[in-house]
Image 1 (spheres, rainbow, N blue to C red):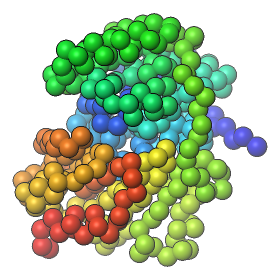
Image 2: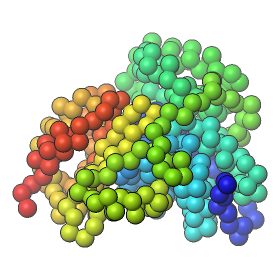
Image 3: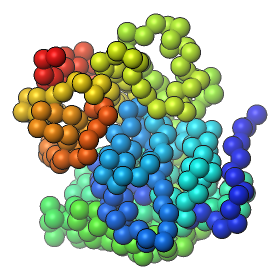
Length: 364
């Protein structure tokens, strides 16, 4: 039997919702931060984030940089978040914050079709107004057949009302031509096309109407490993320090609760896999301080698809990113915990990654 989560009817006005999507490392979080800076002072906005990994990096970055409370549905894909965890998170967000607008950032590996279907169902029609969905693309990726042949990448682009080329400061004229040629192959035509750097989205795009005629490029085949009772959960692996009984007791609640450390626990690892990708994330206690030099050097040597982290170092708190072998960092606000996640298109060896990561911690 399909379960449903009731949306509060306390407000007559509908909540405006936009989806900001795009593949791994394209700059969704940075773009949302830029949009939040443009928020009208008279409006209350909220953000709901779903991530592929378990440790909630993007939500933590958005919260730290914007000062807003960000709701999270960790460790999911779009087929999963259109179920109970996502519905509950959305209902709670609307009931507790009563926002005028919600921006949803789905995982870069998530297919948006089911999310859009959920948000446009009759259960939500009285309460929300789904407007334009925005998809960010790194134009350089269009030269790589892996992207144009990837179903999720294509369907994110096809279902979006606004298609935006980001990171144009590192793109060539050929990249620009490729982007516009690619966008011209998608029908119906986009409501708007963008060519931006540093995620500078136009606020006017968020009030464009949703085009009801947009369709996926092809049939979506759900390629996750599901082993939980409700059949809509990733294949999760917890730190091996946990007992079997502890794992069993957490199964039913982990899709609804964010990861955390137990009292006295210095760190904990979380693993996830799906859609041909693998992730390992770590959560560290506040007193675990990283040697900035050692950590950044180690990250720069990693040959993986994506690394992102919010880390407490001896040189202050940092947001660290690695994408396409390009390492970047920036200072951020004070953190209660460090968290870092590695995502790759091949299986990751937890022990081989964890040992050098722990070696980057300062002695207690």
